[in-house]
Amino acid sequence: MARDAVLVTGISGNLGRGLARLLHKTDRVIGVDRREFAGAPKDLEVHNLDIRKRKIEDLFRRGDIQAMIHMAIVHDPRLSQEEHHSYNVLGTKAVLEYAAKYGVRKVVVLSSANVYGPQPGNDNFLTEESPLLGSQRFPDIRDLVEVDMYAQQYMWKHPDVETVILRPVHIVGPTVRNAPSTYLRLLRPWTLAGFDPMVQLIHEEDVARALALSLRPGLRGVYNVCGPGELPLSAVLRELGRAPIPIPHLFARPLLDKLFQYRLAGFPSAELDHLQFLCTVDGSRYEREAGFRATFTLRETIRSVLGEVPPRIHVVPEGSQGAA
Amino acid sequence: MSTALVRYDQEKPRGLLGRLRGAMQKWTLSQGGPELEARLARLVAPQNEYGVDPFGLELDFVKTAIAPVLWLYRNYFRVETHGIEHVPAGRVMLIGNHSGQLPIDAAMIAMSLLLEAEPPRVTRAMVEKWAPTLPFVAPFFARIGQVVGTPENCKRLLAAGETIMVFPEGTRGLNKTYDKRYRLQEFGTGFMRLAVETQTPILPVAVIGAEEQAPALFDFKQVAKAIGFPALPITPTLLPLPLPVKYHLWFGEPMRFSGRVDDDDAELARKVAEVKRAIEALLKRGLTARGSIFR
Image (cartoon, rainbow over all chains, first blue to last red; front, side):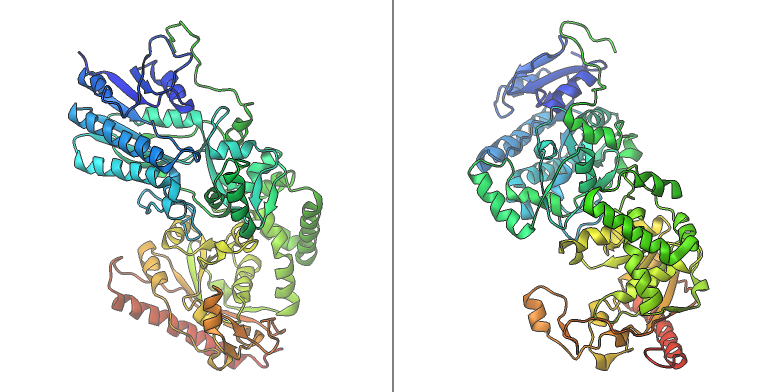
């Protein structure tokens, strides 16, 4: 069997579906996810599997996988630490080990710029060499940092494999339900009084494009992935016509912790750091080495959370063969 | 350039803040006249459609924020510059003595470069890592182009041809007590490593006057430490409110240093001492030349 397939873990998520639609025009895509992929393109092979199950080895054993894009990484503040650790860290270890065992030549891991963590002393543009301090003030994302570190180890341990680690900035989009997108959809979002850090956003489709680009032969390394630029949080909220509620930062944390505990808020207080300090990165290395450029403008990227910016990746109607 | 200033005008915050902003900008322009307007229009910052540069500098906000500084510069401290023609075009590192409890000296130097240097420019001071934790101060600094003084930030700005201001004495100089006036405290060497690495000319600057603006009698170091402040100076007015001293800014000639990036500290210290001597000479000259503290 020819080695020509791309295995995508976590394909049923928003990002995964976008990537599948982008990739399946040029590559044979095999998807894995615990969740159903509703409306999957017909020529897409999707397996309903948990990546921690041994059955996943069968997919690798067939020997037709040339590249793997691993994005089955969850971050849900309501999930327990154990569940996070088990799914993210053990899951990543499992698929990466199989990839090595069965000779997958390219391994792409989707990490996040959050691994650097918002800190008062941060450089304005963190490079890929900056320390990963994300879990210092936000212990709940320890597992995300661990996944990134594990992927880096893997890169050094397997010099013959082209390992790519992508660290995109805050991903937003019409259907994305992560913390930044949800926050920007609030009509009266909290801000921390007297703080207005620069923020970076990237459209989900641009992330899908960045992931597709990472498959280019020869590309290997750790890369920050930036969107169309950076701007003050207040400018983002103004663009969306929001009426923010400024809260003194000394009260905001204990207050949000209580609200979160009673399920009246969707964010743990550690997320407030993103409203207070910089966690902006330098994405120039990926631009230089992979030729990546965000296609959505700043304004389009911001407004995408409202669902009013039309998608650009061709959406394949069910049953068609999806010629580009 | 100037078009960016105009374009952003349409998106300024409305309401009370917007009105305040408009009034402050009017104040700026009424003090500076068409000459200042022309100079502001010559400022170049790579702005996006929201009027900010990648570091968060917003020229429109600069126009707003400089109004009181301009008033202090012209009417309160009556700043006089000497040798500002030495400021070279392109990237440069201004190295000065730091004094006066509040960093007004930094504001006055920055103002002089905006008003009198050729070409006019926005000076980036390298601020303490403490600043981003202070509400209102943090975004204020960012919008007027002040950046946390990490080596990485500094290199990035110099590579973009910007003007950087560093006070190697840091709070040792700023918050020293009155008996140590015009005596340079220990210099950090980080700026020299960056200057050598990025081949940036260093311009020594001496500030005369700031030492007398808020003479500190004591510095309660322990208390300051306990409340997380860099210093807690006690001046005759309790709060370090500045007296109407007269400021003189003396600019020396650009100094160029060469060497290897990984030179050892002794080699760097030698070069730093050279800069320190240049500032000391300027201070001496300035102190001899001035008549009174207030006039």
